[in-house]
Image 1 (cartoon, rainbow, N blue to C red):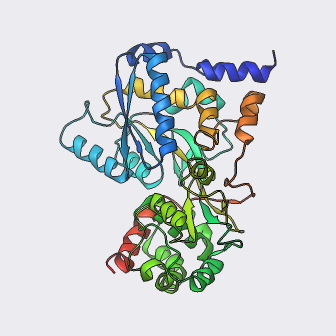
Image 2 (spheres, one colour):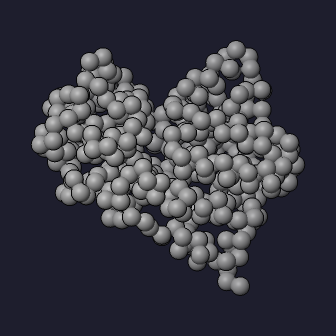
Length: 391
């Protein structure tokens, strides 16, 4: 049997030369525990995948995983903060959470995360360390969160109505002017809306390297001036004259399907294919990116410091890192979320499945732009709401 096949089997079974001596004890403690997994619930494909993973965890490890469907991770962060401040230090309501960016930074800086633990997982040995898995929006993870998948901002259009898409911020402005009322984006602090704003900032700011450092008032004013000038021009041409914004990417998908909008967006390059397969969008829909690249990142799972089921949370996170779980997640027919594993360590079958594509999915090569430092997110959202939120 080939070495790559043996490695893949070891990863699937959770057996790794890097597994620590206490792992058997952690697995034993996990039996009978219930993990309240707080994760975004805005996608049918994502929800179905988590349901499958929960079922597998119960069968294999004798534990329960309950998906607490959320719309805003910041609300979960506030809940953890409130519980700990009230003295609820060991029986918190959150055992595992889907997190990255400013939410991870806020939890870590406040000492509200259990760990370090991620690099002790048996399946850590399969992680592709060439991906930004040890840094989250320029904040070192230091073992306090485990990578789960990769994502990249992707635009969606209908070829029957938009055969030539906009390929830059300038193109998008011209497109909006030529199609008044047919373009929108979700209102920040919605995740997709904030990502759209960051995308425009990365392209328009004169010194994008500044965004990789912690934000300061002086740096923020200089870097964002072209962004606000751009949005001031863009918004009057948007849906409802930019006085009302789409509530979510899911709403934009529906509006694209209804012909109310000409563009939608996603942070999953394969989501349009899923929406076509589920007949939520027509077969003429396609995905595209900007010529200069679009923003991308790694998303993680983390354990709050006051979690009740820390052992089971680690076991479930380890399963999410297994070759089996990562391959299924990457399958475009299931979810299509990018893997964080080193593909060279996976079986030939797994690699082939991860290369599989479907109509509507992003097939062109789009450069990945790095996320700004996590501290920029709250500053951007606050200023955006100040300028445009009350119109």
